[in-house]
Image (cartoon, rainbow, N blue to C red; front, side, top):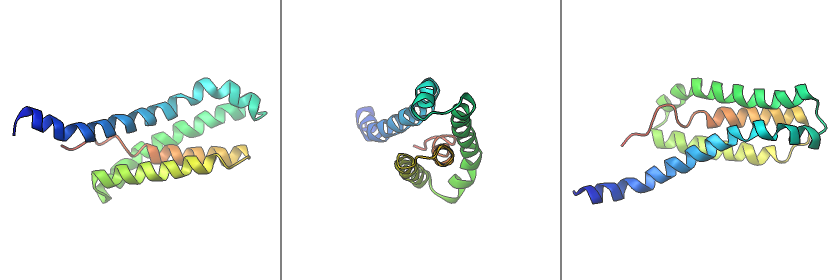
Length: 124
């Protein structure tokens, strides 16, 4: 097997990993700059708007802590698929809620599910 063939077999999983990493980072980072807009749109106080960011950060942190347990029970690819699908479903559910506390709890669960994707690396 030449280097070109080896690289060609690895490029698709590598791009999948890059795309998942991009969406994972963007979904966490985009909340902080949008907090003033969310605060005005949802008629929230400063504390409630900060609570949204706190829930996302805490959920992601707990997801990172629990990722070893999830990855030990599932194979790497199943962990990535499970985390991506369930986090996507949580994000779809998040768009349907009007209450701030339900929105916060769903964002917490979505962040904790997204936290279990990347801490253990990608096996080649």
